[in-house]
Length: 344
Image 1 (cartoon, rainbow, N blue to C red):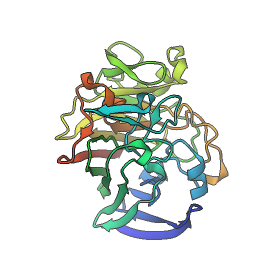
Image 2: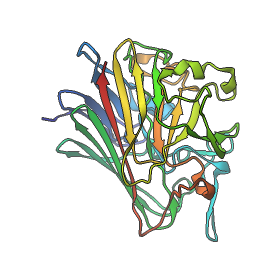
Image 3: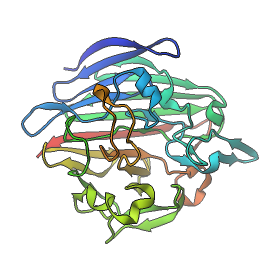
Image 4: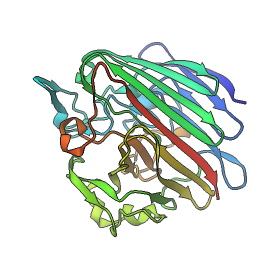
């Protein structure tokens, strides 16, 4: 049985109220905000059966609006980077909002993470809806988005549908920062990571794809589980201050496939991701430091790990990557991911 508990709403300093709800199926529980589709908290059991929160969040709407880390939010209209904020479709050229170096990152400075969504109840979760107007952050067309979070046993399902009335690239991801050791941990060093694939995008220094590479035998080969810090601490990745790389899943989009597993030896928690998306960005919270967290504490860089299923970075401009993110008016964007929580 899934229990719903509305929490006191928060006043948005921009006007209006932000709804909050806690959903609990007795095994796992989440707190969801109507701001940005944010998962503020996610409680899962450790090996002793004690539940604890495993995602980073903030204490107030003001703090969420201050931070630029997309804590727990839906990133969109296009997750990751679009090079120089420029793209074209046929004869139409578009200039998007520039908010990270010379690029458009996660949909721009007023992306989906900062929007107020409409939230309603499902039998086993919540449904959030958003209408993004034509020209929002430079993106073409009216975009209608439906987001479901559902709790099924020890699984969190996230499913997103989107439709547009003009051709537009769409890539939406859930941008939670996971620390499976729980709220008391301030670094991700002890985490173990296992990834099924060795296919990864080669990136330039600003995070734009330049091709596809094979990680076999390298520090980024995680086919056998190993400490995340082995790669994160390498001088090889000093330009990005750690891991911030996109692995290719070879998904067709029709069915979910297993991407990999994140685990924490001290708590005994593990999280396995299944997704229908062609790429998964693995990010070690390299630039998280200084953002506001819970309890009035400033967050630290490398405090958590993001595992972000998505379309491919700059996919709108890179047809050779063989994953076309352009959604036409007669098509429907569909993203489904399953996060399975276990103990060992």
